[in-house]
Image (cartoon, rainbow, N blue to C red; front, side, top):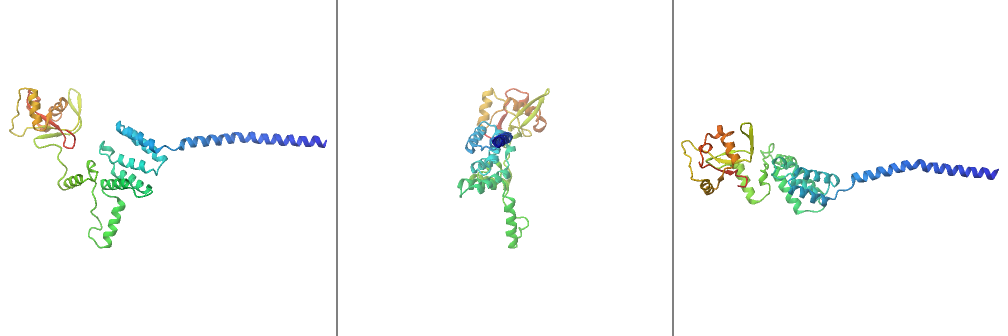
Length: 288
């Protein structure tokens, strides 16, 4: 009997151990599954691969995808200097205009400077460029106020610091510094030379319910009492325009000037008479 009881006790213990292992299997499996899922979700995005992919998107003109790639990569590697510099440069580009955000560029450049293990000339240059583009920073302004106040300077309440620079002049070259100073002192360069009218980029109605979209351009306008010139051929018009550093107007440009912008510039004989000379050119800040 004693032997039988001992055997029964051993069997009971074995069954209990097996049952315990069986009960723990689902828990262990669930934990393993959670671990694998969290590893997949948090797996590191390779910063170098992300930079290559972002650059490819930039070259292809897919700027939204470029931004998304950089954002995702920075979530996985928030202190990667190269990624932070790429994000800063993204917001320093002049085109398209809506993407130019110098304050955000300065934010990423400052983070890159903090993340760098040692002084980095490339990071420092980018930080200066972003700082200049943003017109300084609030922290810098507050420090200037404290310093000026300590010496009783009259500008302590409103220190005259840097002003934000134009997006096409963010690189701190000597030529850009000179041009920015000229713009601050004299105002921006007019988009069109004298004797021409400026038609901004946009979509314009051209009659009969139609519309034409044009890039910004300049077109000849007649001063009071001025007469237009009629040429013998379109080739003669083209040659005359080229001699004045201009070009033939495109069909959509002529339509917009002669319809939607007619009330602005007045009637021009070229709108109704063949072979009347009228030239166009791109805006001054765009390639001709």
